[in-house]
Length: 67
Image (cartoon, rainbow, N blue to C red; front, side, top):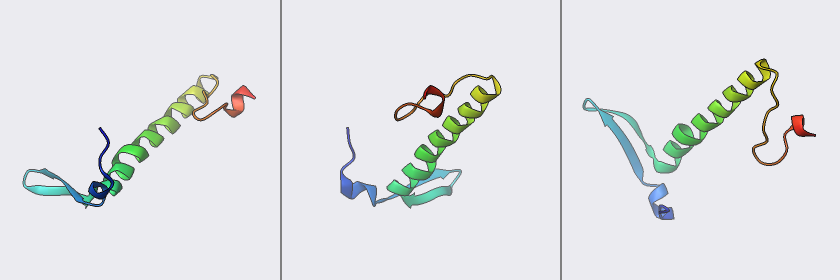
């Protein structure tokens, strides 16, 4: 189920122990906590595959290893 566009600008909070650890608009939380995290781990996987001398799979088409 997709979130309506007007909800993306609403504030979202992560509260733990009575302290707001995250207090930002939803679109910022999604970018920082979801997308950046996935991008980081994708890059980390690439480093490990390079160390094992394995080809890097393409994410959005062929990678340089497949050309």
